[in-house]
Length: 125
Image 1 (cartoon, rainbow, N blue to C red):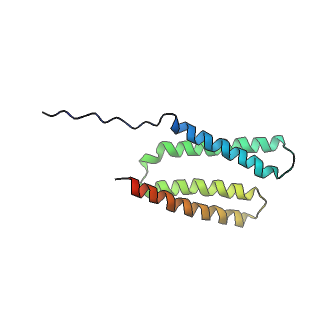
Image 2 (tube, helix red, strand yellow; image 1 turned 180 degrees about the vertical axis):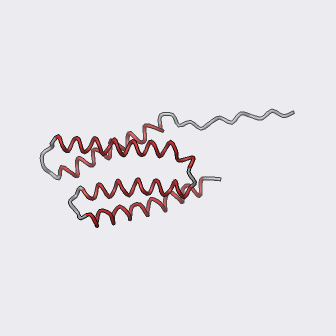
Image 3 (cartoon, helix red, strand yellow; image 1 turned 60 degrees about the horizontal axis):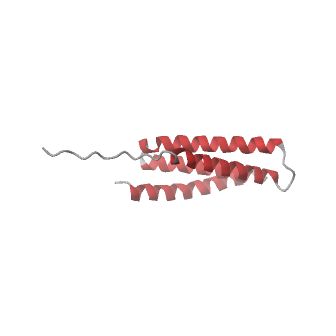
Protein backbone atom coordinates (compact mmCIF):
# COMPACT_ATOMS: atom_id res chain seq x y z
CA UNK A 1 0.00 0.00 0.00
CA UNK A 2 1.29 3.43 -0.89
CA UNK A 3 1.79 5.86 1.93
CA UNK A 4 0.43 9.34 1.53
CA UNK A 5 2.82 12.20 1.94
CA UNK A 6 1.91 14.59 4.70
CA UNK A 7 1.04 18.00 3.34
CA UNK A 8 2.37 20.74 5.57
CA UNK A 9 -0.20 23.22 6.80
CA UNK A 10 0.13 26.80 5.64
CA UNK A 11 1.04 28.89 8.65
CA UNK A 12 1.72 32.56 8.30
CA UNK A 13 2.62 32.99 11.97
CA UNK A 14 3.85 36.52 12.44
CA UNK A 15 2.28 37.85 9.25
CA UNK A 16 -1.20 37.15 10.62
CA UNK A 17 -0.74 39.82 13.27
CA UNK A 18 2.10 41.92 11.84
CA UNK A 19 0.15 43.05 8.79
CA UNK A 20 -2.92 44.28 10.73
CA UNK A 21 -0.70 45.97 13.34
CA UNK A 22 1.31 47.76 10.65
CA UNK A 23 -1.89 48.77 8.87
CA UNK A 24 -3.37 50.03 12.15
CA UNK A 25 -0.29 52.08 13.05
CA UNK A 26 -0.11 53.66 9.59
CA UNK A 27 -3.84 54.40 9.66
CA UNK A 28 -3.65 55.93 13.14
CA UNK A 29 -0.76 58.18 12.12
CA UNK A 30 -2.66 59.25 9.01
CA UNK A 31 -5.78 60.00 11.08
CA UNK A 32 -3.74 62.26 13.36
CA UNK A 33 -2.10 63.97 10.37
CA UNK A 34 -5.43 64.69 8.70
CA UNK A 35 -7.20 65.76 11.90
CA UNK A 36 -4.31 68.02 12.86
CA UNK A 37 -4.70 70.10 9.71
CA UNK A 38 -1.45 72.06 10.20
CA UNK A 39 -2.35 73.11 13.75
CA UNK A 40 -0.76 72.06 17.02
CA UNK A 41 -0.86 68.50 18.28
CA UNK A 42 -3.43 67.79 21.01
CA UNK A 43 -4.22 64.85 23.25
CA UNK A 44 -7.61 64.42 21.60
CA UNK A 45 -5.97 63.90 18.24
CA UNK A 46 -3.64 61.33 19.77
CA UNK A 47 -6.57 59.43 21.30
CA UNK A 48 -8.48 59.57 17.99
CA UNK A 49 -5.47 58.18 16.13
CA UNK A 50 -4.86 55.39 18.63
CA UNK A 51 -8.51 54.34 18.77
CA UNK A 52 -8.87 54.48 14.98
CA UNK A 53 -5.72 52.45 14.47
CA UNK A 54 -6.75 49.86 17.07
CA UNK A 55 -10.21 49.44 15.56
CA UNK A 56 -8.85 49.02 12.05
CA UNK A 57 -6.15 46.60 13.21
CA UNK A 58 -8.66 44.52 15.18
CA UNK A 59 -11.09 44.34 12.27
CA UNK A 60 -8.32 43.47 9.81
CA UNK A 61 -7.01 40.77 12.16
CA UNK A 62 -10.49 39.30 12.64
CA UNK A 63 -11.15 39.32 8.90
CA UNK A 64 -7.82 37.63 8.28
CA UNK A 65 -8.73 34.91 10.76
CA UNK A 66 -12.13 34.08 9.23
CA UNK A 67 -11.46 34.77 5.57
CA UNK A 68 -10.86 31.14 4.57
CA UNK A 69 -14.32 30.18 5.86
CA UNK A 70 -16.03 32.70 3.57
CA UNK A 71 -16.88 32.19 -0.10
CA UNK A 72 -14.93 34.48 -2.40
CA UNK A 73 -17.87 36.82 -3.03
CA UNK A 74 -18.52 37.39 0.67
CA UNK A 75 -14.78 37.66 1.39
CA UNK A 76 -14.46 40.33 -1.30
CA UNK A 77 -17.46 42.18 0.13
CA UNK A 78 -15.94 42.07 3.62
CA UNK A 79 -12.65 43.54 2.42
CA UNK A 80 -14.58 46.13 0.39
CA UNK A 81 -16.64 47.16 3.41
CA UNK A 82 -13.54 47.48 5.59
CA UNK A 83 -11.76 49.58 2.97
CA UNK A 84 -14.81 51.74 2.20
CA UNK A 85 -15.52 52.56 5.85
CA UNK A 86 -11.86 53.33 6.55
CA UNK A 87 -11.52 55.66 3.55
CA UNK A 88 -14.89 57.29 4.20
CA UNK A 89 -13.85 58.05 7.78
CA UNK A 90 -10.54 59.51 6.63
CA UNK A 91 -12.33 61.67 4.08
CA UNK A 92 -14.80 62.89 6.72
CA UNK A 93 -11.87 64.18 8.81
CA UNK A 94 -11.00 66.66 6.06
CA UNK A 95 -14.21 68.56 6.79
CA UNK A 96 -16.16 67.43 3.75
CA UNK A 97 -19.87 66.70 3.92
CA UNK A 98 -21.25 63.34 4.98
CA UNK A 99 -22.57 62.74 1.46
CA UNK A 100 -19.13 63.26 -0.10
CA UNK A 101 -17.53 61.04 2.55
CA UNK A 102 -20.03 58.26 1.90
CA UNK A 103 -19.57 58.66 -1.86
CA UNK A 104 -15.80 58.41 -1.56
CA UNK A 105 -16.15 55.35 0.69
CA UNK A 106 -18.49 53.67 -1.81
CA UNK A 107 -16.11 54.37 -4.71
CA UNK A 108 -13.15 52.87 -2.86
CA UNK A 109 -15.28 49.94 -1.67
CA UNK A 110 -16.32 49.18 -5.26
CA UNK A 111 -12.72 49.27 -6.45
CA UNK A 112 -11.61 47.06 -3.55
CA UNK A 113 -14.42 44.60 -4.25
CA UNK A 114 -13.44 44.30 -7.91
CA UNK A 115 -9.73 43.95 -7.14
CA UNK A 116 -10.11 41.45 -4.30
CA UNK A 117 -12.68 39.39 -6.18
CA UNK A 118 -10.32 39.18 -9.15
CA UNK A 119 -7.44 38.07 -6.91
CA UNK A 120 -9.55 35.49 -5.07
CA UNK A 121 -11.13 34.18 -8.27
CA UNK A 122 -7.83 33.72 -10.10
CA UNK A 123 -5.86 32.30 -7.15
CA UNK A 124 -8.34 29.72 -5.84
CA UNK A 125 -8.92 26.29 -7.34
